[in-house]
Length: 150
Image (tube, rainbow, N blue to C red; front, side, top):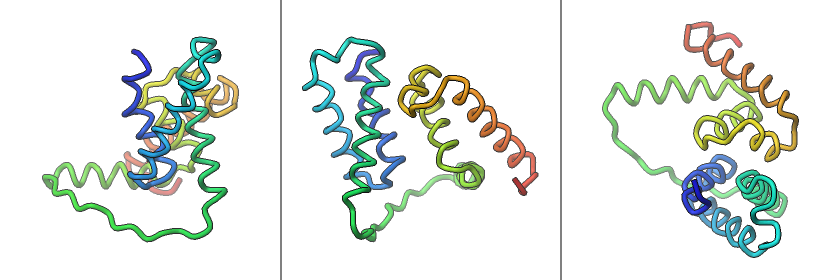
């Protein structure tokens, strides 16, 4: 998979951190601009981890600069009731996890990054990624089985 195909995945990652679709798009574009402007670094090591690291740092920098939180209206989307219930259950289950666990699941399962790339993006060891991923999946399993108290 080449870099251009990663745009949607990187956008989801930025959206995860910001919750704002417009800001996420801006940060995604800025990440790609910075990635391609540093030509010597492109192709060295793991390019996806490098790209995600740039995006993560941009998201962190944005929140350091931000002084007030803006109110935004969510778009209404109408789905069949079964999908709504599934989404609500999954959202509730994910809501029981801390941000670190949710971020690992996003990178691993939604954006399909490998363990090594995920570890590099988050600045932790591969072992730590495995451990946190296993913890998160166990908590989700317990929640979905009906053991609501995590």
